[in-house]
Image (tube, rainbow, N blue to C red):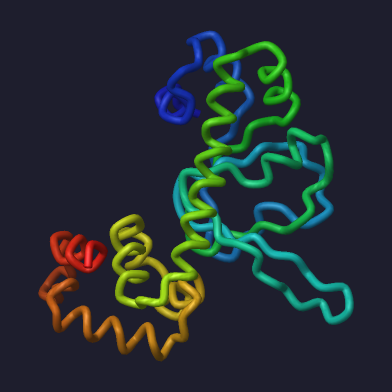
Amino acid sequence: MEFSTLLDIFPDLTEEELLYLQKSSVQKKFKKGEIIFFEGDSSDYLFFLRSGIAKIYKTTLNNGKDITLNYILPKSFIGEFAVIKKIEFPFSAEMETDGEIIKFPSEDVRLLITKSLSFCQSLLYMVADKVQKNYEYCENLMEKNVKKKIAKFLKEHEDLFFKLNKNKIASILNITPETFSRTLKELKKEGLIIERTVVKINKQKIEEILSD
């Protein structure tokens, strides 16, 4: 684990605290479809999604069907409340795309919570930021203007737009694949997406749609 990577996640920690985390943290690349943890697993690690998208889901007992609860976007923790409360993970987590995750031993995390005010503040800020993103995600689901939904996703996650299956993006935005496809064609005609040798996004057009 590179020191600079930890500094990027926890910019307010002391060098001593960062070195403490560096000794035990593990950075790992995950493939699409790879399981991060299963529901009922012991929360021995705190997971930080550095890149890619993770899917949070529960499996029903009666028919074994997976029900998607949420999608976690970078850069966010996964299952942090289970680590803090010392409980088993109440859901499963799986990579929706290729990505990278950093694992922090839970005991080390809980020790720093008791000893480091700066770590507590950093953790609290990131959890609050995640809650804010979830609120914004819910607001975006309620947005009836499909063009604005797509434009906002492009503005915030342009890289993921080209990595994810279009049906998956439609699912994340809570719109039908047919509506997504039709609206995408309209946006291309309007110049938001420019298809040449390399596909480009017209950022000025995004702002015009969002401010309309």
